[in-house]
Length: 308
Image 1: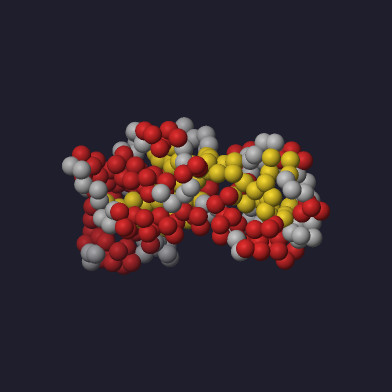
Image 2: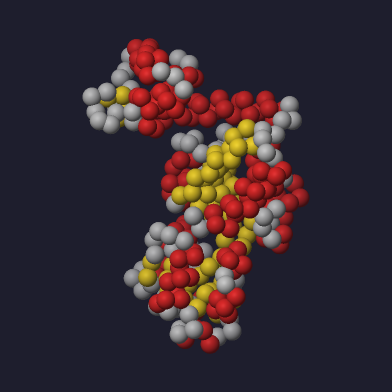
C-alpha cells in the first residue's frame, strides 16, 4: 500500500470517473486503474463498483476512502511540520468558512496573505456549519473559521475574535422609533433571520427558543439579502457588526444597538486535534486579525499566539 494508491482512490471517489480522476492526478487511466486494482488485491476487497454509472464506492470502499483521506491528511502534515521546523513559510492551506462570516473576512484575507506570505496557497470553501464540521472530521479541510463553541470532542477550538450584533430595522416597523432595544424583549413577529446564523447550538439570542413559527426564516443566503428583504418587506433583522461598514449611508440610519445583555458571537479557528501545522495556523490567525478591528481580537491570541 502506498500514499500514491490512496491518492488515486480518493481522486476516483471525488470525480466518480476513472478518466477524470486520472487527469486530475496527471497520469494515464491505465496507470491509475492498475494501481487501484493492486490495492484491491492486497486488501482483498473491491473498492469501487465499476459497473455503476457514475462509478461509486462499495460499502467497504467507503470505509477505506474515509481512512485514506485521514492518512493523506497526516502525511501532508508531516511534510508541513518539516518545513515549519526549517522556518519555511510555504505550503497549501484548505480553509472552510461559514457563510455568515466569509463576506467580512475573505476579500481582505486573500489580499493580506498575497502581500505578506505569497508562498502560502490558500484554498477556501464556503459552506453551512454542519457541512464544515463533517468535512473537518473527514480531514477534507485543514481548518475551519466559524462561530463557536461547537462541543466536539475530536476538534480543537481556537477563539480569534468576538463581535457584537445590532438590529437593522425598517422605518415602517414600530421598533424604529426606539433608540435602543432590550434583548430579552425583542419580538419574534416581523423578524427575519438566518436559521444557522443566529441559533446554532441552542443560540446566542434569548429569542431562539421562541422563534419557531413566529419569524420568517431565510435558511440559505446572506446577511446582505436579509437587509434587502427588510428594506422591501418591513420588519427587522439582526446583523453582525462587521456588516455595518458594508451598508449604504442611508441604511446606517436603520441600525439600533441591542442591550441588556449585548448579544455577541465568538468566532474561532477549528482544527482536528491531530493537526500539527502550528506555524501556518498562526500565520492564518495573524492575517485574520489584521483585517478586523483591534477591539474584537481575542486578548489571549493577541498576546500569546497559538500553541498546539
